[in-house]
Length: 89
Image 1 (cartoon, one colour):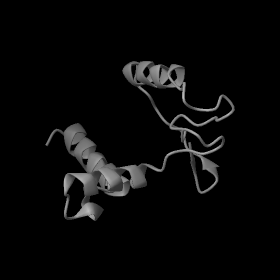
Image 2 (image 1 turned 90 degrees about the vertical axis):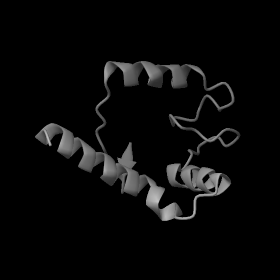
Image 3 (image 1 turned 90 degrees about the horizontal axis):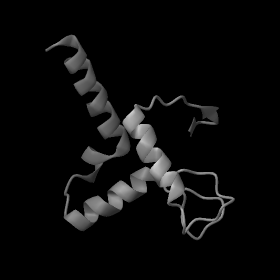
């Protein structure tokens, strides 16, 4: 994974790794040369933008405050939850 051109480490549990392997093994509609895990089918060197996918689903579901469920908001909320969980509060 990359952010602003830099590699970003990702820690997977064994369960997450198993699910990732399932994804990699089921890329039948994606060009073999596409290196991305969440590859964009039909485009050789492209990937899916998570915020665009979330926005499309939110609109389809009738969400009124789409900014509240962006990837950044979800990540920050998850970090807050983890902090609270680990602190024992």
